[in-house]
Amino acid sequence: MEELLKNAEEFLESGNENLKKERFNADVSDYFKAIVILADYLIYVEIKIMPKNHNERFPLLKTYFKESYKDISELFDIYTKSYNLRLEKKDADKLKKYANEFKNNILNKK
Image (cartoon, rainbow, N blue to C red; front, top):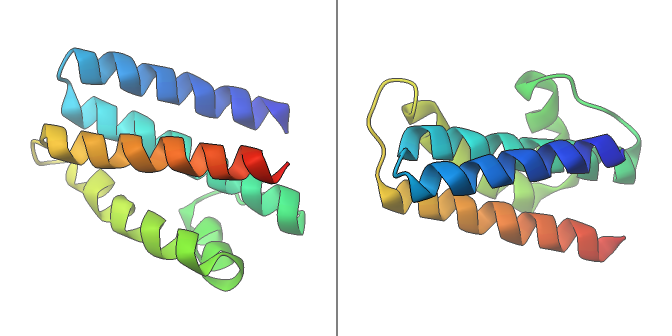
């Protein structure tokens, strides 16, 4: 499971680098990937299931982690906009803030 935390940290670092370079679409993508990796870590630690994709992850979040599900679903909408729209700094900042708070909350549960 430490691999998940290392992967999340790598995406957080990449997000920070992209934010500095004002590559907001790449930044949002990196932060969202960190968030879902952290969600997978939380799911595995708490209920011993490792989701393979969004179709498995979101129902588990909805059932067992309702508040996280609500937040991550909202961020997922921003993330999917990065496919074909230009995102702004406020979008990147929102995902960065949540990613860091989510990470801290999960690690403080240990």
